[in-house]
Image (cartoon, rainbow, N blue to C red; front, side, top):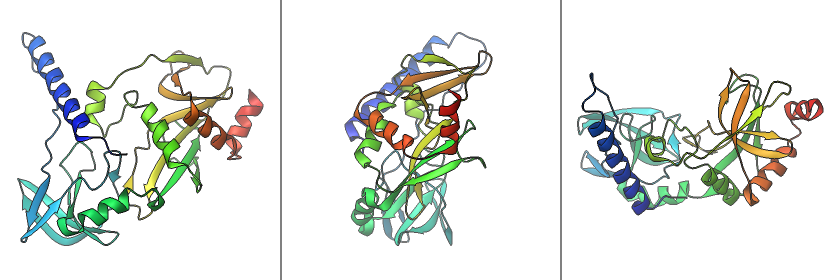
Length: 266
C-alpha cells in the first residue's frame, strides 16, 4: 500500500527536527558529527523535451536488475540512465532518493499505466525463504514461491514490523521509527532457522526488502531484532493476530527439511 503524502511529510519534518536537535546538543563536543538528512527527490525531470515523473511505485519497492540503453542525461547535477521496464520508458537516477538503489522516473504519458501495473498484486510473486544462515540469498537457502499468497496478509505482517526493522533502504524509519521492546530466546540448546518473506515483480525489476528476519519457535512467529552471539540469544518481537496466524500456517505447510529437523530437535 502507498503511504499517504501527509504521513510521509510529517515523518520528514520529524526527522529534520530530530537531526537539528541532535546537532544543537552536540555542538559543544570536539570534532564533527555527520548526519545524513533525507535527500529531496525531484518529482519530475525533463530530457529531450519529454517529462518523466517518479512516484509510480510504492515506497516499499526497490528497483533492481535494470538494463540501461545507450542514452544517459546530465540532470540536476546527476546522471540519469534510460531504461525500459515492462515496456515503460523510464530514467534511473542511481544516487537519488532514500533507497540505495536510487529512483526511477516514468515517462509522464505512461505514468498512470505504470502506476496501475505496479499496484496490482497479480504482477508480483511472493516468496518465503528458509535458511540456517543469518541473511537471505545464501547457497543453503530454500526458496519457496507462494502462488496463492493473500496480499492483504503480506501487507499486514509488514505493517506490523514498521518501526522495528533495521532497513538500510529507509533512512527515515531508522531515524524516527518506533523501537519496541524485544524479548530474548535462548539458542544454546536448540537450532532455530531463519525465515524471510518478500515479493518481487514478475518482470524482476522491483523487490521488497529481503532483510526482514523471522523465526518460528514453539508454534509462534517472531520478528528477529538482532542476534547476541555472546549470550547465544535471539532478541525478538512476537507477531500476533490474523496475519501472524496466516503466516504460521503458511510456513508449516512448506514441508521444509530445515523446519522439519528443527521440530524434531525441539
